[in-house]
Length: 278
Image (cartoon, rainbow, N blue to C red; front, side, top):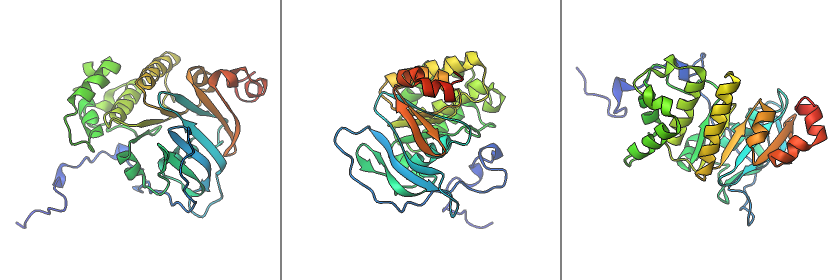
């Protein structure tokens, strides 16, 4: 029997859960950045995707001079019609898009050249819309996986997550794949919070859940923002999302169409007519 391969100290203990990978087995690769980074202006938001232009590989641009931003303690919501580039804008901020114009800055410093993994280390937490939990692992194991980059005692953070989502504490020994859709989303958000992020990014957190569960998730998101964590969120439920938003961005074909506070956008006749059903 040969010596163990110490280049992989975890050996066969790695998670084999196919629900967290693409069916094709293809990996999500970081995007390339060929723009020009800039120092942040005085007083600019804590996180900003500034005038972002780009797309995937050799394909056409999907984002066109698109800007989204969020301040500490705020909830910023990106809304718009299907195919407007909402999730693409989120992925650009997280480093999963080939960006050749604009910049992404966190705390005034450009992070546009960093891989998504490096952005996690800088304090960004991203919760994708689907395939965002380890279905064969327990709720508590999912939360523990969220603390993979930490070297300190994370039990206090786990207690805070359980305070925020009491149902997760009740079901902490249960496999995450056995939970309801809304509970799975709570696991996904809880796991992101285990990293103690400086920014929380949510891609369609209420997709496929009932209106009651949607309201509950929004309540929890508000509680997270009240702790000072900025939240950048893409939502299809535009009206409900703008009701809780400090700031809103309406995208059309990858470009900014309207922006303002949530209340301003809800009151704007053109926004209401075109995007909120009147």
